[in-house]
Amino acid sequence: MFFDFGGFLLEKAAQAEEMCEAAFKRFDATARYNTEKTLNAFINNRVSERHLQGTTGYGYGDEGRDTLDKVFAEIMGAEAALVRHNFINGTHALTVALFGVLRPGDRLVSAAGEPYDTLKAVIGGGGGSLREYGVSYGEIAPSPDGTPDLKAIGRGVKNCKAVFIQRSRGYGLRPSITVEGISGIVKTVRDANPGAVIIVDNCYGEFAERAEPADADLIAGSLIKNPGGGIAETGGYIAGKADLVELCACRLTAPGIGAKAGCSLNQNRPMYAGLFRAPETVASALKTSAFAIALMELLGYRCSPGYDDYRTDIVATVKLGGERELRAFCEGIQAGGPIDSFAKPEPWDMPGYRDKVIMAAGAFTQGSSIELSADAPLREPWAVWLQGGASFAAGRIGVLTAAKRLLDIKGF
Ligand SMILES: *Cc1c(COP(=O)(O)O)cnc(C)c1O
Image 1 (tube, helix red, strand yellow):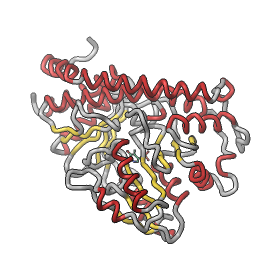
Image 2 (image 1 turned 90 degrees about the vertical axis):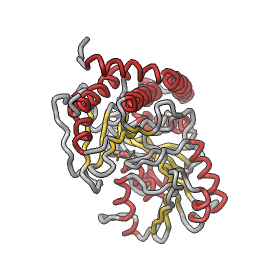
Image 3 (image 1 turned 180 degrees about the vertical axis):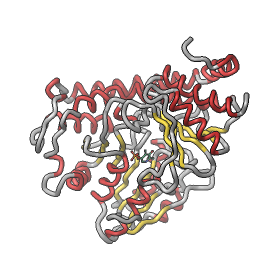
Image 4 (image 1 turned 90 degrees about the horizontal axis):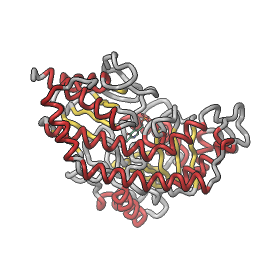
């Protein structure tokens, strides 16, 4: 109708959609469950029109902010939460969680291998990293198949203050860790070191399953990913044990002030609306993801996870085989999005990343990756990380535009 993908690609697309039928049903069922959970939390906390109004200045007595924290905590199965537009991204929320909990002389252990690229500077870089504050760090490599090595974790966490678990794969190729898998790690850590504080990087995982990693002590993530529903304009969250969330609030603002101040400006409405919408948005992103995986596999590319796999996050990896293919795919994703479709993404030195990163996101919110987006560090194995798609109908077009670019450079 409006887009010309050619008969060959459209035939593959129809085949891909058929392959995904069972997965789509599961995503819809999860979204229904999570929307009911979310709606129930809004009702239980008597969310009102006045909560959507923001405050200015100190933000004392900001009931919208305080109620949003309660609603969010209830949805996450946590005692308390800190949901703030002041978190500039997920890295910032995770940084506040780490600095909130750790003190000089403490040790941090990452239980599932390397953490996300930007956290490496937070842990061991300059500019006031954990290392500069006297916090030591260790990493437990996953098993050869990429799953957490529980035996090594049991041995490796004995003398540490905090254990870090990353749910999603980051720019890695290991499988993402399900909520059940995280529970297995949590149990192992509790047995070996009952006092350790367990912090989960929950980025890209929220609402992909029916439960969140609620047996961890703290979870953190970004509002321009899943829990912002494609509507929050910025922000992040930390949720978990009330005393630990309070420590994080003191780190975000100032000791003695914690969560009791910090104005919400005009951000309460988009944060509430986005959270409410998030389960359905995540289902659309999961459909876009499964569709993309099925289609790319039909076109001969290796993807992970599989299109029919149980999902704990919205990220898919497609191995493209070379820089030219990587650029073409990202250009296609950009060209098939609603905003800046005419722009050509160029790899650049993004702050916090070691290699140049190419990012395509034709998004209403800059860099939002709950909207259809593709990104990759420019390095082996020339894979692209694809996520988002707040509307499946539009996400499908974006994926097809990218696939078309690939076929074009192969002279198909
Ligand atoms: C996106 C992401 C982060 C945080 O990234 P920001 O761009 O700072 O929001 C952290 N960990 C994982 C696994 C992620 O996917």
